[in-house]
Length: 289
Image (cartoon, rainbow, N blue to C red; front, side, top):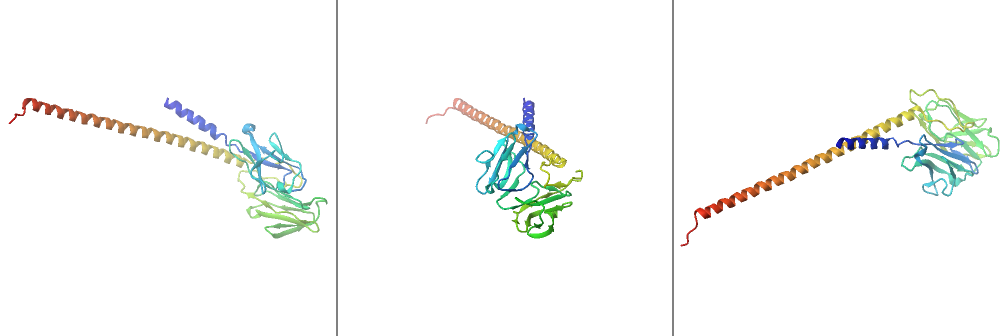
């Protein structure tokens, strides 16, 4: 019976450790900035379609609202916003009914005339990243100046700037400016470490590509490793808990047995004393004076 209980516990823990799959939030068009009135689609991508993922956001005016609750239209695993508004600026993520959440993305919607198209997801070290400074009404090949952390990087005659072989030092806050049209909002670009076994990446050009990137083999390996560790720790905690309860039961049982034995011996001593006293009374009765 004890063995069957342990096996059942291990099976349950294994099943729980397998439910930590995380979704990946993708944005199409793949950009962190949008003009007022733009159309945007956000998708929760995950192999286990039964996880019940929901898209949520937190803006300056609202707290943790989900798609369809006064904004957006949910269909399948995607949420579409047909008309972006500056009030839609905020942090977006996918959340499962079982608890886990996806990566978070920060989207900015401006009512101005200039935006900077930059990576909405973290980029990997060694990638080439192209930034595009564009206006809403005029061609996107106008001369533009690009800034990082408030300092001018360079001026480009066509509104494009490519950062080749990005490194951690390229991480920061970027914006652009087109003379006569204005300045874009600022967006943060995150650079992640590159695993040595990852094949060389191709150039990332956000201006022309809207397809979301796929999960790297490194991310999948790390996620698998974390699941294994999680399952092992849970199994260890359950076994330690059962061992502690078993030991406590043995100790408590021993205390009870000791109390019973002591009481029994004490009762025997009292009975023996009473018997000896009775014998004295019978053999040597006291005489009256």
